[in-house]
Amino acid sequence: MTLLHALATRALRALDPEDAHGLAIRALEMGLGPRAGRDDPILATEVAGLSLPNPVGLAPGFDKNAQVFAPMLRAGFGFVECGTVTPKPQAGNPRPRLFRLTEDQAVINRMGFNNEGLEAFAGRLKARGPGVVGANIGANKDSEDRIGDYVAGLRRLWGLASYFTINISSPNTPGLRALQTKAALQELLGRLAEARDALPRAGLVPMFLKVAPDLEDGEVEAIVETVLATGLAGIIVSNTTVSRPALKSRFREEAGGLSGAPLRTLSTDRLMAFAEVAAGRLTLIGAGGVASGADAYAKVRAGASAVQLYSALVYEGPGLVGRIKRELAALLRRDGFSNVKDAVGQA
Image 1 (tube, rainbow, N blue to C red):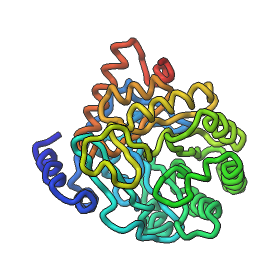
Image 2 (cartoon, helix red, strand yellow):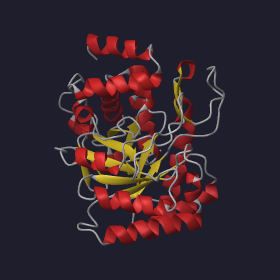
Image 3 (tube, helix red, strand yellow):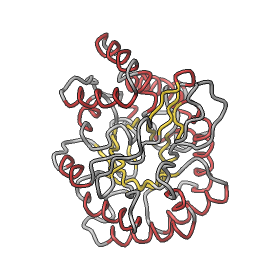
Image 4 (cartoon, one colour):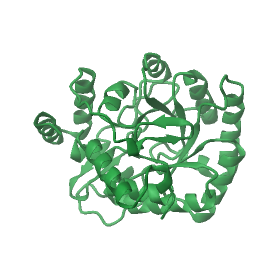
């Protein structure tokens, strides 16, 4: 990380977290972001048919409106997931709704899918250049047909995004997580599969389901079988948690989803449960608590073909992705792996 970016990261941490995020987005739009060099060849991999220069992706939430995916790819991420986007623009929940738990290296958010809507999102994705850019789609809070919202997102962004993520696991839209139950999930994924199959290149654009870590083991089996039955490429494990492990920050009782370091063990354990049930039949992506090459490597060994991060950027700044990649490459070589794929699931 350059001295300039280190100083900028420190300055942003002194601001209200949502204001700091807005300033970071504007700075990236102005071309002030870092530029990474060429990736170590050992990190190149393929995930659900997508060729990635490295397996370290930017999780959704950072680039909600598809404004800065290109600068974040230049910063060194192997892929960027934009969103969550809903059909209609919505303001989200009242502020304050984003909290830094500095002592815990964590974040609590109750943003509520604030975004500019599908049309603004699609307009920016039309200008997409090279690189893998995914679209995370959701439902409006006041929607009378939430499944219809997901179908609308898929249809509108088809041909613009490299892949799609179906987000049913945010804790900040009332009732949304109920879509993870077996009957509701079968209906949702069935309608999405029907819509997908009517679109061009239906089998060539992967779709992932993003799940919460707050699941029982029986729900893991039901989700895997439903995802397999509807032909999705895989599952992203996991979204934020509504649980509250031992936390030190004064914000520990705030409502919303907890992410960052306290989510690391829970999300990785849940990832291993999905990997055991899926038994190689699905592609898994690991998210939650990734802040080092060792964290990324643990998720790969637990069954993830790639990982995503966001919360750690709040504390580490844009130089983090380069450090994670260097550490991950060193760990792969230390253990005798010649590529990422060979390490997947080796735990």
